[in-house]
Image 1 (cartoon, each protein chain N blue to C red):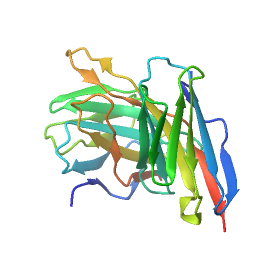
Image 2: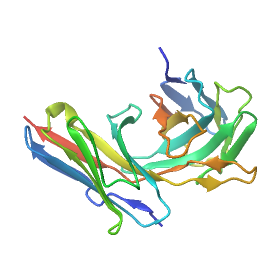
Image 3: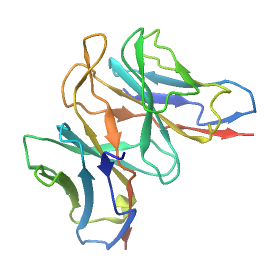
Image 4: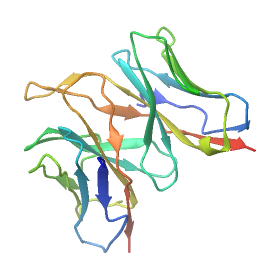
Length: 119
Length: 114
């Protein structure tokens, strides 16, 4: 059962335009959401995150929107640049108790969306 | 220059052989994680460790083993019991002490079966 879904495997946009990447989730316990960017044969790079107590977080060209009632978040990139071409992963977490009495913060990832920004 | 290092970048495994992937971090993070990525798939959690000398199975732990003897190191062994080991393996770490924290990833190791 996929708890974090990125339904668009790919997205193509023109340089300078807005890129909108979408992510849906099913687990209402998720309280922290992250976006990672990944180039081939490299590790993911953290981009931006949002807590469930917010509905928007902005960092330069990147803005993440969270709609808790719809269990939906989106990443907006404005303006898009060719260097933004990569796979973008949405991830979510919630604190879960461990047997030893602590908490863990496991991330659940979507399958990713390949963004291509054309010059 | 803090970060996460993984070695080797490429690793070849023969049938029936165990191989160990290295992951080291100098970020003073308590928590470390191992993920596997297959083509067209997201990242799936293999094992994680919130603290030294303790680790937990993730979603796909069968055929893998780990140890956490030092805070800086979290090696992953792919055993001969893992029938489909070819994948891109990613190590990550996080502070492990706060809620809503970010995981940071190493550059990855690609494992191929000969």
